[in-house]
Length: 170
Image (cartoon, rainbow, N blue to C red; front, side, top):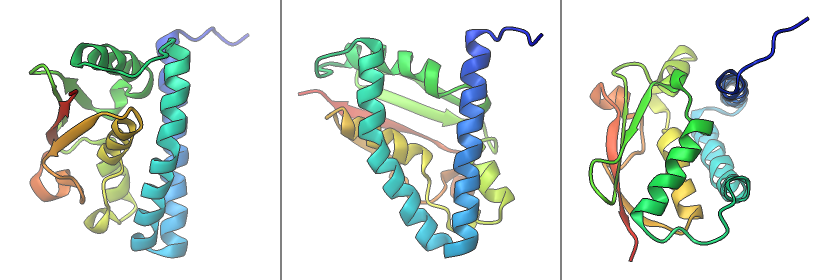
């Protein structure tokens, strides 16, 4: 008889399976269409998925109103991160100031960087990870600035991937 999985194990398993599906989708699109088209398709998929994800997440968490301030956002994001950002992704999220979300991947250890590098497309890969966060924030109707601007893989360009979303809740 199989053993019963703990909540954290279920979250990890589902996220690993989803990320593997995502990676295989990216790989097969890359082989069929080339990197420029797969970057375009990846971002289109992320952008169209984000509003559905946010609606489902808000419903699951019982959030019916607009997030209006940094504390509501922080509470929301911490709850979401437990579901969507498991340890294997090697990212640390913090809130160093009231309206700042800081992200930082372990040096050389971003799951997307490693996967895209493995399939030989890292030189032209446009980061989908930070783009997904930005699309979530857009779907929440929260204004923000992101520093640095992320297009290509920051890990490739700088050896590190870290930055800040500065939110404007006015």
